[in-house]
Amino acid sequence: MASKLLASNLRRTLAKATASAPALRGFSTSAAATASATATEPYEDPTGEIRMKGVKISARPLYLDMQATSPVDPRVLDAMLPYYIGRYGNPHSRTHVYGWESEQAVETARSQVAELIGASPKEIIFTSGATESNNISVKGVMKFYKEKKRHVITTQTEHKCVLDSCRHLQQEGFDITYLPVGADGLVDLEKLRAAIRPDTGLVSVMAVNNEIGVIQPMEEIGQICKEFKIPFHTDAAQALGKIPVNVDKWNVSLMSLSGHKIYGPKGIGALYMRRRPRIRVEPQMNGGGQERGIRSGTVPTPLVVGMGAACELAAKEMEYDDKRISGLQERLLKGMRSKLDGIVVNGSEERRYAGNVNISFAYVEGESLLMGLKEVAVSSGSACTSASLEPSYVLRALGVDEDMAHTSIRFGIGRFTTEEEIDKAVELTVEQVEKLREMSPLYEMVKEGIDIKSIQWAQH
Amino acid sequence: MASTSVSKGQILSLYRSLLRTARQFSDYNIREYTKRRTVDGFRQNRGLTEPSLISAAFSEGKSQLQVAERQAVVYSLYAPDIRSVMETNLKGKR
Image 1 (cartoon, chains in turn cyan, green):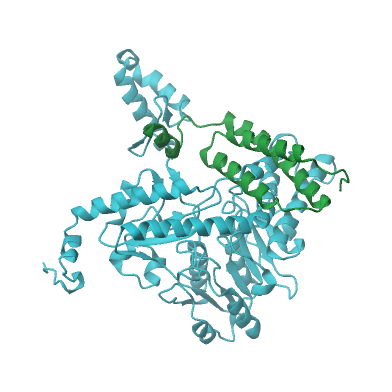
Image 2 (cartoon, chains in turn blue, red; image 1 turned 90 degrees about the vertical axis):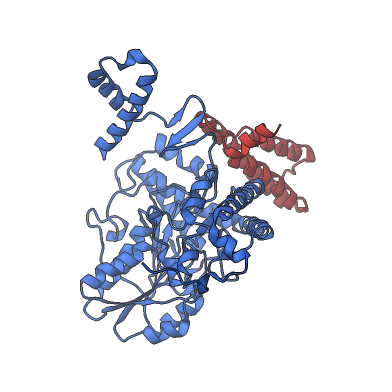
């Protein structure tokens, strides 16, 4: 990794060096030294251009990828900064004021998080993020109750970290049921009911899907779990602060939360663990016994304070943000639909979070479209899988055709998105899609009235 | 809660200060948001008549102004050399 970085820096220095001949002399020694010295050289060169990954852009793209991560709210940063400067105490230090003030800040943040989800502060465990919370929930619960419970129910459209935790359990001999979802992305409650077995130890269903934004029927699932007395875990990373979340209404035993999806810092998350009736887990991280032994390791005060501030802000701003984001979503969809045909919104249109608009553009190649949209920061699905060219497993689970799954783009709208940005994104996307369709023989055939699906492609 | 009532002049002055500070943000999105949130917040509270509610809203606004003033400085310290595509395009059109 480090050598790769060095090599790429070296290459850049070399390119620069050829421009100015004298610098070329003695390259092998001095340039290598400069290469390591300039390892942190900013990628923005003085001419006012960004060069990265072979792409040259003269302005920062407008950001519409809020599901990947959100910018830190200045009010959150304002709350965090004191804990990066003077108040650096370890919240577990019991012998001096540095520790006491940090502990107090952590406890305030714990109540702020609890308040937003209708829980008690004692039920909140700080972790490094929703991925860790999901791991503790899925693996921790099953390993704790492994004598009697050998079965987990989850869905095919869960986040990678839940699915991978389930895979891990499967290797250890547990049974997993991956529930299919309908074309609208929602779980069939009857199928869930039918999948329950006497040894089912956990049901894990995410609240808001990260790729398509559909909202699962949480209350109904919670009711079924209550009926069969099965712990219910939900990954609410994409739901927190965006839709009303209440642990009692949903009847969840465990809930995973994340800081950086709600305009807080990265590297912090929380796990809600119900106390009555009590749910127990086997810790996945052992050590100093912090966070009641569930998650050992020094609690990062500045990040926790940031997450707390972000939660408090979310509670205050949810109504305002939601109204605005819904308006922007409408603007985006109206703009696209008025200028383009053959676009499909993936997932249920009624039961979805407005800030997540996942659209497939027919007769367009997805990667070409993303490459063409240099001035708009969007992705084809989740950030975790954006490196692969495979179509998203979530869209495949919905039964979206291969060709449509390949052309999906997720537009993520957030608190700081402006109307002008939406208009610009529509304008650029429409322009790009039209350009690509013009080149596409498929689109030409469709326009002539040929049904593409009826074509017999020559076999080789 | 402070029993002294807040004058119209004080409120207008706070409004103007918030908008002035909003304009100082180097980041396009934060700048636009701060302006928009200020205008919407004051519009939302326009109908308040209860003096205690007015003074609560006023002191909330005051503390928000302090946050904005601090953060406008922090943002300016780390402002990227390259601006948002939204700003460069506006310049190009004119």
